Length: 145
Image 1 (cartoon, rainbow, N blue to C red):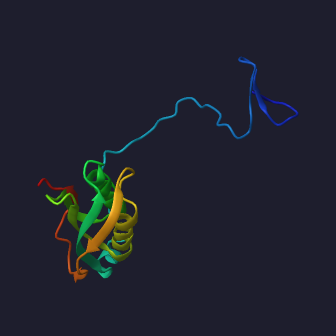
Image 2: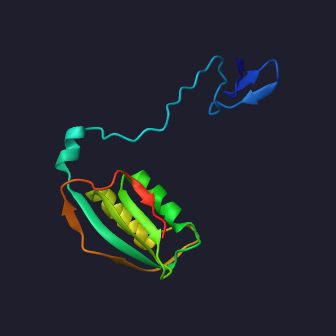
Image 3: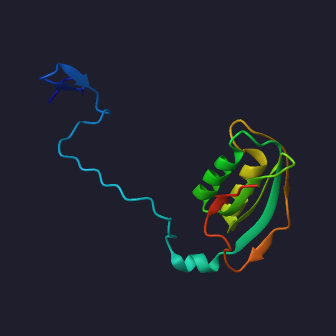
């Protein structure tokens, strides 16, 4: 490699120029991956201090046949929210969420305003929000009818 007067690198073997922003290929790079594990809180003591909130929900609109439940599960897992959801016989999606305050509120907003890319949310009803002492779910799941 050679740097010319324009600040670019020239590969003498290939005659190709690279700008400074492009990565320089390196040899013997090892990539280490770890198996998918449940995320652990950065500070376990903080987990005991935070309040856990719980509520049931029902989503109305075009929410069946548009991968709404799958996207709901992905969003819940990303936020660290636990619970479940399922299709109802009334063409709605019902479920229950549990989470720490910020994640819980983010999930509520996502359910009310976002949903899956091809869904249309007409109405979202949340049950009474309760504060619970501990999680009653290990993860977020999709239930069958």
